[in-house]
Image 1 (spheres, rainbow, N blue to C red):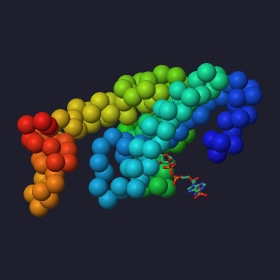
Image 2: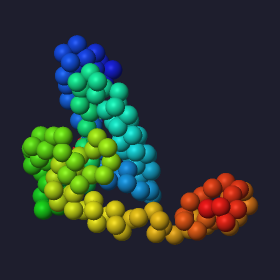
Image 3: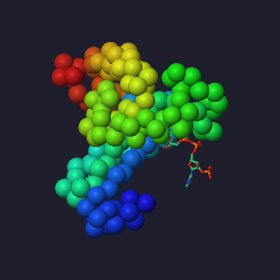
Length: 158
Ligand SMILES: NC(=O)c1ccc[n+]([C@@H]2O[C@H](COP(=O)([O-])OP(=O)(O)OC[C@H]3O[C@@H](n4cnc5c(N)ncnc54)[C@H](OP(=O)(O)O)[C@@H]3O)[C@@H](O)[C@H]2O)c1
């Protein structure tokens, strides 16, 4: 889709590409690994594309979201933290170009309760506070105090 539309946008010297991201890309998400991986891709791909296309007048934005009512999410009734798609889309267009609490480049968190959620989750999910990885049966890996897994590195270098 991007390959199809970017040449036309380049010709017009203007364009807007909104890519739907997800909190699934924040940290590991066991049992939703493919979904989390694709959202990680969407994030870094959008950011890279944004740098590439900026000189052509094309804006690329990574739209970061927590839950929205939909078939996929399974949420049927909206609440303060789970808006309807209509509310979400309206907020997205109202806040184009604004970060709204996002710390990543070219990223926006258009729905304000999601900005608060993101702040809370970022505080709670700080990777520096993650438990050390335990790979006791694999001698090629050492457990590092910061929770990083570095092949074969001595603990003192972690
Ligand atoms: N809902 C959430 O809580 C939430 C949170 C974070 C991010 N997101 C992201 O927001 C986006 C929309 O999600 P949603 O919750 O609105 O999901 P949804 O209600 O299930 O809608 C998904 C849409 O994608 C279409 N689709 C699915 N597979 C397709 C394919 N292979 N080719 C073309 N179209 C396809 C579906 O078409 P049909 O109707 O014809 O099946 C449907 O219109 C997704 O990228 C999702 O990851 C959603």
